[in-house]
View: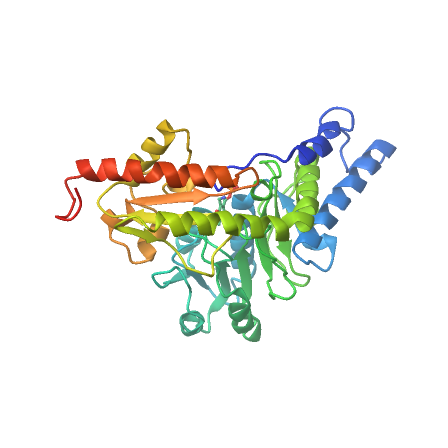
Length: 384
Ligand code: PMP
């Protein structure tokens, strides 16, 4: 129940990758036949990822090492490239740290960053994005869907606003790509971050879609690989894996999303029957794989420990925010008080979760919650 933190590599992906660790180890920049053959598979992986997100040409895709790197490249690359035009950037209050922190750092380099708030279900209001725009706005960055509560943002409407005003539009598609159809042309996206591990590809690979005509500054300089946008010898096994994962996702996404929505709705329906329990995120506009909750009077960490002892692994929020004891900024952005956000439980479903898994959680969780509440100093009169 923690696929959002890490997903296994699909066995078909692993099989596709294997020859590229030892037998087919050539560098795609080499001009001998082995190098040319590596170049060929690199380009076919690029075409596969391009197809997943509806990119018009494979060369719109730049391979990176992870979604974090893609976000950094997109944000710093666009900000530094368009600096002469303006220094204002708009984002939301619920972005992943790999967007928050590069923007914080740009803030120290003379850029002004506006964080547009979301409502209590994590939904952005396009009018608020519009009213944040100034003459100096050069970049808008909005995540397609949040990985902690799954709310899907009105990306197309925001794109309309940004393209009318010639503002670069970056979308962090890490949690959304492979879960819902993302189409850079229909969605009118200039820069899109794509993750490999979130689609059952290997870690160590990621991608950034760059629309034709959108120039950004590269952040890793060297031999000029990846169209000069990201130098360094390509991680061929990882890239092949990401390409294979993209192909499988394209074919299997619809059916898998329907199956996962069924499990998610079952979890949500049954877990919300418990007293003092709330859904986090939007009721309907949410990813198929995310069921997130808030339990009054108890702490998420204690629920996790209780679940662990029964063989269920879950999270309280983003794995990347788990190093601090503070609740995640995204939960606070929903308007939750600290003590409310502390009672969070995040269940992220994946390929290998079954109906029995959902039933087991539904059967196990109430006893854990009840026991913790019986010990909680915060309990109200009604809860024993
Ligand atoms: N953006 C979002 C929305 C995420 O949920 C994550 C974490 N999976 C990332 C970016 C960063 O991904 P990674 O740690 O693989 O670089």
